[in-house]
Amino acid sequence: MSQHEVLIVDDEASVLDALAQGLQLEGWRCETFERPVALLAKLSRNFTGVVLSDLNMPDMDGLSLLQAVKSIDADIPVILLTGYGDVSIAVQAMQLGAYSFIEKPVNHAELLKVLAQAQEQRRLCLQNRLLSEQLKQSRHGRLQLIGDSPAINQMRSMLDLMLDAPADVLIEGETGSGKELVARYLHDNSARSDHNFVAINCGAIPEQLIESELFGTEACAYTGADKKRIGKFEFANGGTLFLDEIESTPLSVQVRLLRVLEERKVTPLGANHSIALNIRVIAASKTDLEQLSQQGSFRLDLYYRLNLLKVAIAPLRQRLSDIPLLFKHFAIIAASRYHKPYVPLDQPALAILQAHSWPGNVRELRNLAERYVLLGAEAAFIQQGLSLPDTVGSAMGLAERVAFFEQMLIEDALSATKGSIKHTMTALNLPRKTLYDKMRKYGLNRDNFTDDDLSD
Ligand SMILES: Nc1ncnc2c1ncn2[C@@H]1O[C@H](COP(=O)(O)OP(=O)(O)OP(=O)(O)O)[C@@H](O)[C@H]1O
Ligand SMILES: [Mg+2]
Image (cartoon, rainbow, N blue to C red):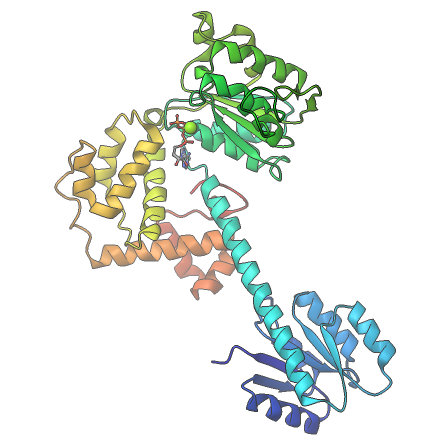
C-alpha cells in the first residue's frame, strides 16, 4: 500500500476529480470530499497523511478547516489552495500553522513537490512520537516498584511523602532488595527529574581518586591532572546524587563528604573558587549504619547528617505476598525480551518460592524468573537449589493456556484504559456482563488499574 496519502476537499467536483486523478497517477492514495466536515471526521492523531484544502468553500472556509484540523492534531500538515489575490489570507494561513499554500491554477509539479515534503514531515513526526512513547514506557517499566504487601505499600506511601522534601535520604536494605530502584523512584518522581541522577559506588573508587571523582579537578591541579574534570557532585547539580555502598567510604573521605553535605558547595581540587550545589543526596547502605558508627567504622556525625529521612527496605522473606507478583513481572519482561512464551507458575510451585529465604532478595528472584523463561521450570528450580512439585511443568493444558492468555488481554486492556470498564468493553468488544464475569473469574479488580498505581 502506498505510503503517500492525501485527503482533498474542494466544493467543486471537477477540481477534485482533476486533482485526484493527477495524484493517483503519481502513486498517491487520495480521498476526496466536497464538504470539510466529512474530511474532519476522517482525522485523528494517528492519521498518516496530508490534507489539501481549497480556501474558499461555502459552508466552512479553508482557514476554519485549518484550525479544526490543528485542534485534532497540530502536526497534521495542511496545504491550502488559494485563488488569485488571496495573498493576505495565505499569509494569515501560514501564521495559523498551514504547511504551505499553492496558487490556483495548480502547477502539478509544484503540488507534488510540496505534498511529498509534507508527507515526509508527517512520517517523521509520527515516528518521533512513537519513539518517545516507547522511551517513556521503558522508563516507566524500569521504575515500576512492584509489590502489594503491607511492607511495600507502607514504603511507597512514605516515599511519596519524601519526593520533594528538602532533605537527604538514607536507604537501608539487604543486597538486591531494591535500594537503587528506590533511589531512582525518588528522583524520577521528584521535581529534580529533569536533571541528572548520578550514582557513585563509594566502595568501588580507589581512595586516591575518590576526591577528584566527587569534587572534580582544575587543570594542572597536581601532577598528572592535565585536564579539567567535572566532579560527580557538580554533574548532579540540580538533580540527585546517589551514594551507593556509603558504608564502604574510607574514613578520610567521610570528613570531606560531611563538609560538602553541610556547606552545599564544592571546591574542585586545585581550584580557588567553590561551586554552589543544589543537589539531593540519597545514600544507600547494606548494613546498619548506626551500629557501624557506634563501632567507630563510620563517622557518627556523617551518620546523623544522612539519617534525616530513612527508608528501610524489608527483605523479601518478610514480604512473601510480593513473590508471585514480582515473579510474574520479571518473567513477563524476560519472555518478551527473549521472545519466549510466558507460562505462569502454578500454585504449588509458587508456594515453594514463598518458602525460600531469598538471601539475594529481589535480584535473586529476578534471576530465577529469567532462568525459568529460558530453561523451563524444572531446570530453573534445580539451579536455584529448589525442587519442583510433580504437578508443575507439563500440567498446563490448552484450556489453562487460553484462560491465561485471556486474563492477560483483559489486564492489558484494563491498564491501558486506567481501569475504565466502558473502554475495556469497547477495546475487547465484550458485553458488560461477560467482562464482569471474566474479571471475577480471574480475580481482577478495576481499582487496581486506576490512576498511577505502580503495582502490578
Ligand atoms: N519492588 C521491586 N519491583 C520491581 N523490581 C524490583 C523491586 N525491587 C528490586 N527490583 C529489581 O531487583 C533488582 C535489584 O534491585 P537494586 O539494584 O535496586 O537492589 P540493591 O538493593 O541496590 O542491590 P545491591 O545491594 O546489590 O546494590 C533490580 O533489577 C531492580 O529493578
Ligand atoms: Mg545497588
